Image (cartoon, rainbow, N blue to C red; front, side, top):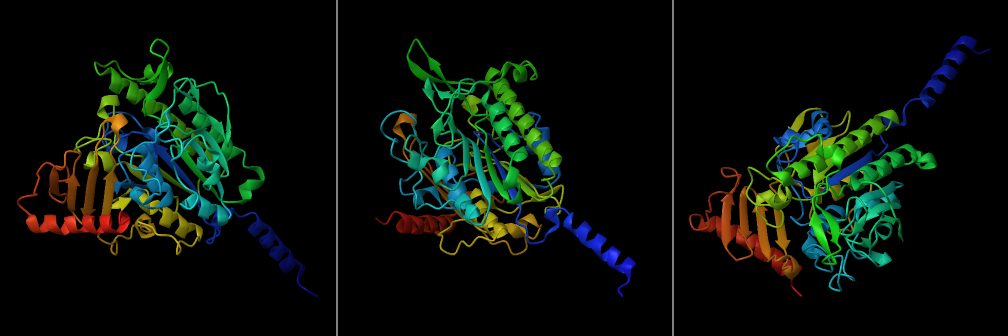
Length: 458
C-alpha cells in the first residue's frame, strides 16, 4: 500500500507546479513591446540630460539598460522604419525608400514596403506570436498591399501618413485612421488614443493570452501635426499639444519648444500607463520593453540633439544617434549602460533569436545583440554602418552618404562636401580630418564604394 501522506504531498506539489507563472519556463520566448517615438532627439529624454521630464521612459532605463551609441537606419521616417522592421539598409528596398513617402499626389501612391521584403513581425507570427501595430506606419498607403496586415501584423490601428492632425486623425482634411484595412472616424487626441488602444490590447487578449505577443507601439508624437488651412485650401504643419498638457509646462519665450515638451510629456504619461498595465496583468516579468526614437529631432519644430551635430534629415550623428532604453526583468541588469555601437537594424536578428525564428534565408545588415542585453560586450565586433538619404525635391532635401566603421565616420553631405571624423576623440563631429588623415579617408571611402557596387550595381 502506498503512503497516503506521501501521495498527498506529491499531488499538492503537482498542483502547485500547474499554478506557477508561465514566465518561469526557461523555453518560453518573451513578449516584446517596441515603443517608437517620432522626431525626438537625444536631448529630448530626461535620462539623456533633457530638461523635459520623462519619468516613465527614465523608469525603463533605471529598471533596465541605457544605450549610449544607438543608431537608427536613417534620419528620415520612412527609411528608418523600413530598416527597423526588415533589418536591412533602406537602399536595399525595391522602391529605394530613401526619403519620406508623401501622402498626397501621385509620386508615392504606388511605393512602399513590398511583399518579398520580409519583416521580423512576419517571422514572429510564424513562431506563434500575436502581433499588433498601434500608431504610425508610413511604409505605404492607399493600396491594401502596403498596409501592416499584409506585412506581419495581425492587428493595425493607426495612420499611414508621415503625420496627422492630432485632434481629427486626418492628414489635413483627408481621412487617415485605420482599424486594420478599414478607414474609420475617431474623436480624441492621437497620443491618448494610441495609448488607450495599447492598454486595451494588453488587457483584452483573451484566448491569445496563451501566445507570446509583439506590440509595435509607434507614437506619432512629438512630430508636428498636419492641420488644414481652409483659406488656402492646403495642409499645414502645426505643433499640436493638448491644452491640459501645455498647462503643465512652464511659460517660455520658445513657444515651439514648449509645445514640443508638452507633447513629449503626454507620450511619457501614456508609456507609464502601458508599464502599469503590464504590472496589473502579470505580463511584465516576461516582457522585453524597448523604447527608441525613429531619428534625431528637428530644431525647427522643437527637437534638440545637443550636444551632437546635425538633426533630422542630415547624416551627422544628431540625425542618427538616438535614445534607446530596454527593460527585461531578470535578463537585463537594472541601471546598466551599454557603450557599444548598436543599431535599430539589430532588432530583427535579436528578436528572431529570442523567439527561436530562423533568419538563415534573410540578407540582414543587423547583428544579434542578445549578448549586449546580458552585459556581455567582450566579443562585440567592430561595427560598420552605412546610411544613404535620397534627393527629395518637395522637401528641398539633397542626397547624403555616411559610413561609420570602428570610430571613423565619413559624411558626404547634400553639397558633396566631404567630412571625416574620429568619434572616439570627437563625438560631436567638430573637427574635419578629411585632409589630415588621407589613409583613414581612403579606407572608409572604400567601404562605401564596396556597398555602392553591391547594392546599386544595376
